[in-house]
Image 1 (cartoon, chains in turn green, purple):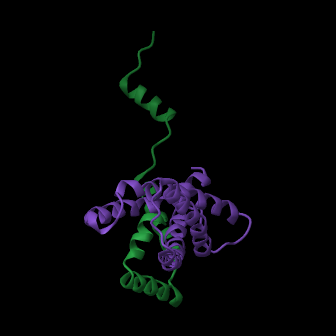
Image 2 (cartoon, rainbow over the protein chains, first blue to last red; image 1 turned 180 degrees about the vertical axis):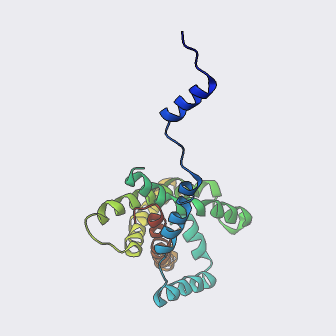
Length: 73
Length: 132
């Protein structure tokens, strides 16, 4: 009966199991995600700023609108 | 992950983030400031709104495979679905909080908030998750 040395078993395991991703490959995930976040960024138009200002003004003039927004929509 | 599951998760993210702030804001208000118990009216913003956003975004992702739809306009349209539901729930619970005057001012504000939230919030998360 053959006995396997530790070295031989280690070699067989290394051959059978695919290597884990290297640090370099793992590190590519975050730059890709960051790129996706930056690429998808929408730049606000003047009308968007005007709408934000209008809602803020409305909330200041009529505080009940804040409760309306928070509770129901 | 399945794109529709991602769409649902992307849709519920924003309202779910807002809910704790709603709770904090209402808890800090004195109970004399409003004529209802907080727990009576929280069922809508906590139980229904996030799910509605998730399902609405799922529908958005499905529709966008067929035609181009601006996210802001599509999101604002959700207010037309939720407003009757909110009013119906108020009627069902016997706690009608909306007056005609409040609705006339509040609903346009809600449309704007929904437009901006979908244009800059949900659409962005969709992009990050690769379904934009």
